[in-house]
Length: 359
Image 1 (tube, rainbow, N blue to C red):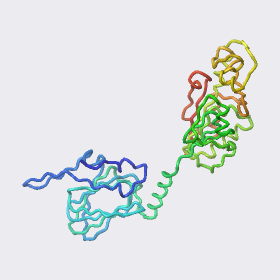
Image 2 (cartoon, one colour; image 1 turned 30 degrees about the vertical axis):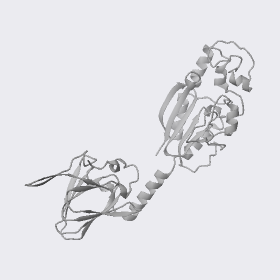
Image 3 (cartoon, rainbow, N blue to C red; image 1 turned 90 degrees about the vertical axis):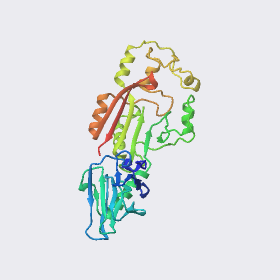
Image 4 (tube, rainbow, N blue to C red; image 1 turned 45 degrees about the horizontal axis):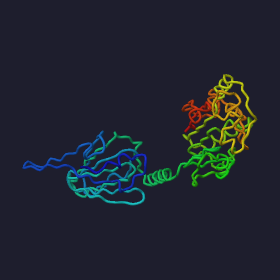
């Protein structure tokens, strides 16, 4: 059975010379001669789209000396001897091919040079794509730079920001909030938070990241807290730090749905608002002891005006689907989706926007 075709399947990553593999071929020996079988799926990790044979005029002829961006090749020495040097810009290795009993799988991203040692050397090359000059890298310095940039891009850990995380700090994000993790624990005594969460107090209107450097800007239940004057500053700062193709992900109260709910609910005031620990744990709100929406003066009032149990917990803005789409158009963002859901499954009616920055 052929080697596992992982090299061919990793064209989005950086290949090394360890991914250049020798693959034994099936041979059937009889009195009449030797039958060599090369079959996709068994020996080849791809369907053949193009093939060619190279036969040099003189011994010691050198060919190749290039790399491919996407093309994979399978080399088989039919006669003579061909030495194949492979180079990943860090190390080199030479594979000597003398007969068709095995082939050499060369994935994309490998600099390859063939030396035809004998006059009768003949090399069969099977390819997974048709010829395209754009796929070739013929200058070695350009190849080294191409691989270095690719390695740097893959080695870089994605930068994901969770702005105004509040009681929802996330693993693998830089969580940004005016409260520290300990303060978040005090503010939300009914929640449990891991000790390794990263929570920092950055200015969300002046983030400490260069232009085009952040992979994702996320903000759940934040933008309704922005005063009108800060709204454009926030959105423009998010677009500034996002890399081309980066993701903007926002959730906010669906103000239209909240107003309809409030008008439909009973006008049944119970008690003055409280925000002490016992009140939070018992869902006191305005004496309703519920997250239900059958009373205007319970949880629905907090939906419109914020929980107000500390600085930054006041709602000072509102959004609709139309407003979110218009903001994205103004900033040159491509809207991927605007979905509707209820917070925690049964509470505030919310809008969820996902949009990407133009490449």
